Length: 279
Image (cartoon, one colour):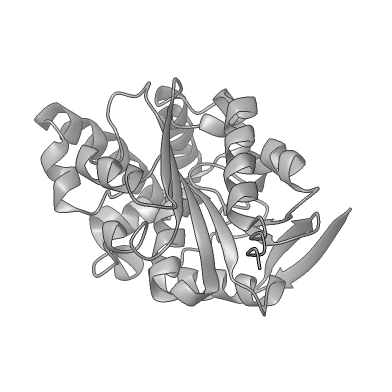
């Protein structure tokens, strides 16, 4: 059974009972990304999901700043779990925005599950990339940022650019569910649009040291979205864990059984009541 709320004009869906798990997808996805994960969790957790602003193609474009995105996530968290902190389950740009919300409102987050995006705004990450990898990252991201800029004047061209790049990097979302409206985070990154991305929190200072974190990453990619140093530090932090899959960027689609079982096991261990001490 599903419950629905409308928060800041967005449809928020809740399924299941138990501690709240707020799920944020990334580019170029929708809340449907988490369908299998919800099915595996809803008998013990209340799964909460919504389309990021602008990612529902039935609605007008809606770019938002980092501050506005954090305010939206906060409004959802406060509505679905006013008295208890939530678990954040994050992928791609959902990681970026979810990590920033967690850094600003640590008391409202119990733990974080991050998928394939780690310390991408750290100096360690930039140093870990080879020159060719930096060119590849800049190439696909600038392409998508340009598609955003063209969207208002040439939406057909911008959509074709977006769908071409999605296919090129291995996304198998149906083309009709992808559009240039989803690309504004790349315009934020490269053009400083909507306030840009300067001044955001350093992931390594929040995930692990302040919040228990489980991090998944795909090994079968031309480049990683985390530094080896951060991965090693997180993997040796009590209460945290890392797991690499023989998969690409969309782990929950490529290895659904393994991914969902791993998430469920970690959450069950983290939320299990402590046994009473012997008298």
